[in-house]
Image (cartoon, rainbow, N blue to C red; front, side, top):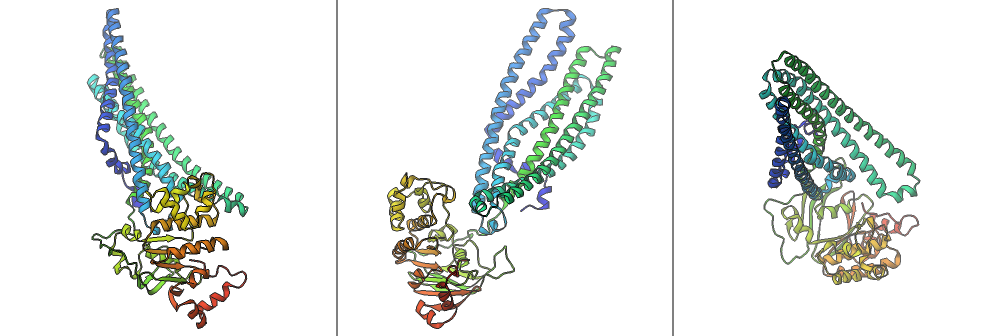
Length: 594
């Protein structure tokens, strides 16, 4: 997703300013208190000068007491304004990051499967966590410090000019020697910070993948190999971070050396003026204090600049996600699907090539029609393109050529939400969320009542085992349904599809994870569910295939045979061969879905 142009784009944090400007009142309050704190700080040297030039000279105790009381009042005002500044800027940072996380997550969930075919989910999660933390720091404390130090720096320089134009000319002449290198080094810091964040994201992606597959890793004794690979990625991330830190350290040291070195030179020159009587001690003290304020502000600004540069790399990565456009989008002028729904599906000379595998043709001029209420089974060897048919029908991808129609309307002319509302799928690889059993079943209808969920579970032959759980429907399924058996997960998925009550039912190896007893129960439930619905079945077990109105035999993306089970067996072609193989030992998965 990253391009060289993106890496070199200037001031990437500015792209996030629209998020800040949503909260104009908070921004106004933050700027108000920030300015007040800076103005209070700039007023302190004035009080010090008058105290030195007048208070000590006249030995007036009441005058000194008055000025110390004034200093105490300024300190109180500075404390209050600084506290309020901190509150508002940190609130803005938290608010911006919350909005940013929500919008990035919404964009990611809207992206088409083609995006996830070439991007790791763990790396994307890293952007939502580590990168947004960098942004929060930038729009919170770092941005606040940057603005405060800018105000102090320019304010102090202005007061320096008013105090002593001659001394100020010497100081201001040294500023270009300091600022220009800072800008150049800042670019280097941002590039190195971006590289460090990319490496860290890759590390997080591997960790997420490995932890999610911990049972597989342990089953194959792969702990040491995983540990070694993760250790290598962590070390790479460390070296990248070290490079960024080295650049920031050099940037900070250089800035401090140049700033305070120039101040020492100016002070020496000013001290000569006091000795010669051309400038008062109070004026020199005032100038020194403003010089220190300007120098420390500039020095801190160099550190903040490095932090903002690092956050700039995070902003680039997040805005890349926000700029991603889903490959599957709603048409500008969508066509409404007929109502009531009939459920007729038609593939018209459909060809398809996966974007991530452009050299392999998955479907080649595939044509067939499933009439309303008809049950059609699609079988064939592994890799024949069977599951791809369902992916195209769900419009996870668009066909490379040809058209797919639902009730006579091209899917590309329909709103994606309207299309998927008429489809219910029971996938081979069931997704169970780390939520309650009720919420998992109700995922297809979030506002379903407990009774509706229970009726769906009964129809899927799942109510019995759910009722035996400690908390019944409120039992947590665990991450990826780790606490449930394969058959239980499959029946929850079937209950989810039953609850949706869509006119078109897609079964992708819906009984593949069930034992013989569970398969019989679920098949009974499916038989009832399939009544008066258009059903497309991907299966390698013959229980569903035998009852299909038609069987399509697919090989290399084409339909090579079509008919009922009896007709195809009698024909003695590919289907008959596959049917014979299914009953031979060791060949149970001959028609596993792609």
